[in-house]
Length: 346
Image (cartoon, rainbow, N blue to C red; front, side, top):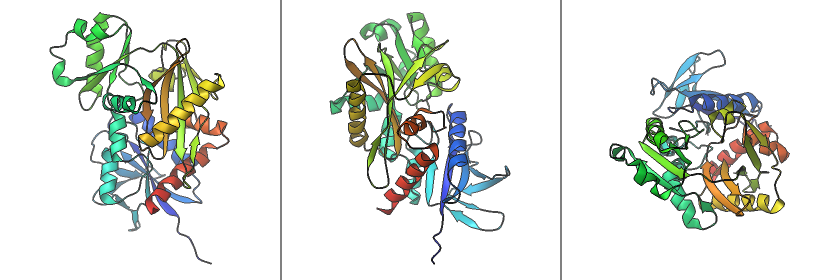
């Protein structure tokens, strides 16, 4: 009987953005739930500081340097481990913006997320929104992209001429609602832009109109056989001090996530159909999550963003949706891995 070698999977965590802790939580959940009888798992940490000290964190908390020339690890036994797949679980820079994807492409290391171009495009909302609008399959909130060199001469009155308050101000390439502000007065605007500018690695800020209505999310994954799975949608209902799906609502319990969402079938189907189209139009890979606002009075659906590295702790939205579809959290992780391995073999 031939022994089949278990695949070496690097669970890549950390990163350089304000989403570092969220990424660690996602990576820890993946690391804890993937079946070790099927795969050899190695936790690879990309720390915020120093940025070049990538290392394999062992189960005994030892740190073994990563050779970034070929993305390998040499264990204390002298064994050199090379990876069959990188399970990217870094939210924000460098895992969600195409940087790691480009690095792995150059080395020929397969990975679990969307490719370089899609990751780079979708990570920047100011660049992604016009592309999604051009597809003609869903409305997109009105917005304006600001660059760092525009801030010193910023005229709040002129900026808000085309908007009605409130507006959202957010880092163009940020996630997890870090440094995102719901601006209700002109006096808040400059400070909100400065806060978002500090968080955005490229010095770009998005000012976006507020869409009245309900917020829905839809997870999508294409499996190793090529079948597209569109999960039951979730409605996010903030409460307490959270007026929208901010950081506290996402990670500190200030929201209720209802899966499947209690909404009319035609609305749910519309969101699923739109997500299916966007997944292919944006050339997505692996598991992604599409976020929308729906205005029931106008019957209008608005695209907010696509998360190409969505949160994947058991409490996160996509694993909740997968369980509602009859897929366990562990099996969701296995689907992501097998999808990445299958893409590499094609």
